[in-house]
Image 1 (cartoon, rainbow, N blue to C red):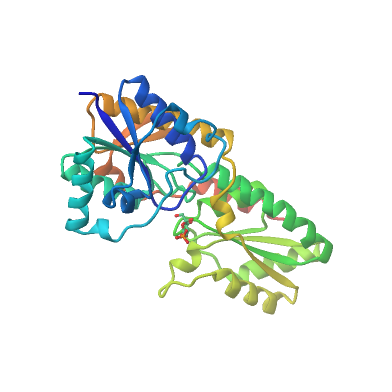
Image 2: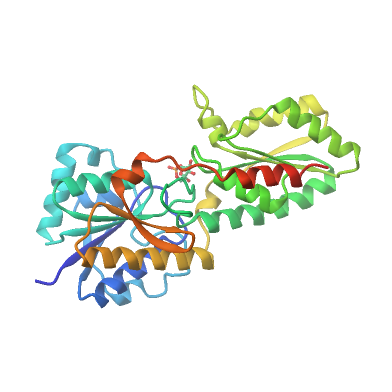
Length: 330
Ligand code: F6P
């Protein structure tokens, strides 16, 4: 009997997910497997939103952001009854392997399927880049480029009005987007949850910059700076902006970039990363492997046990952080 492989996207969508779906479908066909799309993540798996896919199903999507399989968060899947429904639906369709494209929460769901005898492989996809065992997750490169385009535009108006801009970016509890985009944009300060900072010291740096003739200041803030507080604070940049304006006397504006970071046509890097990771995922399924995620480490595609990966914490590359500090010092 021809093997059938289910494909789902789960969690926050990320540019490049469609490139991964496209590769999974066409690679599965090249291994004489039948690809099936599971729509709306685990929610759709429970509600039997499962349909066969073919090569034409994924034609013309490599350049599209988002996910044609849609995504959804599912509380029901966290229950034994939900998992049972999901597994029964897979068995009804004679699907015995599932490729899960998403982040750590999606991978935990994959492990639940594995406990029920379903072969699973995880493909890391989230703009947050907070998944261990891979240098980058699908979507991160595109998101950082989106932020860079936005900050380039903000810099124009900041210098025209000689203002300070606080730019808040996504990343949940991880500072990768803020760090990489801040370094790439020459931000004057980068505030991330992984590194302590003193707002008064930030204000001193701002005043020193204006004193030597700088026409504006760009402060990158990762949303995790607020989400990691107890209780968590949404839109922490508003608080930070007020403090900076009061303590420097310079006009300060807040830009919370929000969900534009989740969209857009994936970059070359994300398309190539998605294609390479997804192809390796199909190879692992064809070999009968399960309970693993694929990752790219220094350009090499590798596989890691999901149990191991989920027990790790992705750390920030502090070399980038210290480089940004040096380069922003006047
Ligand atoms: O995990 C991706 C992400 O975009 C985070 O950076 C962000 O905090 C969260 O999703 C937003 O979730 P939602 O799309 O449900 O508002």
